[in-house]
Image 1 (tube, helix red, strand yellow):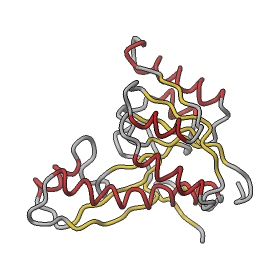
Image 2: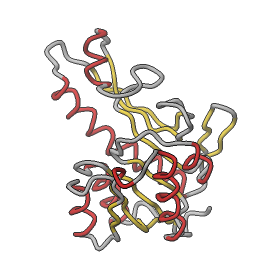
Image 3: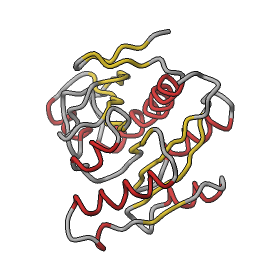
Image 4: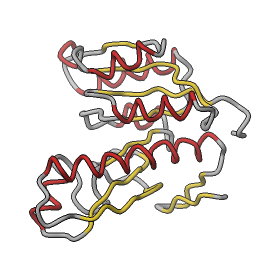
Length: 206
């Protein structure tokens, strides 16, 4: 996909949507040749919904309680994404582990941001895991999604020092600032056709 072709993004959210906002800002600034085709939230109270609505982005609330299992929920989500002709799926604070239904529908076209330097500290409360382990540096990772928990090929990482008096909250704030930078950059590389996957390695051409 060349840089002058618009890529259609589908953004999945569950919470406040700060990464969503960072992506919107980079698109509106003309830095990323993409449009957000839809935002899907599994949480009707997510503030990310308000952020999307303020920018005229279509929002679909698809609450998981309506479905009997994760695979049927993902099948419904895939149908929404395909209806909106989405090229790249973005997990921006989306608090669900995807099943093979979603992963197989968008192979090497689902990106997630994780608040640690993977493969260290996967799963929930990664910032607290880093503090408890006593590491000097943590950070964040943008990766493609596979059927594991934070195990897909790594696209970009950013290092954030861990201070001696850090709490989960203070470290989270600093890591989040780095997230906003590298997540949008990874999307930009994808849109401009600069990403190639070679096994577990993601190669980015400048």
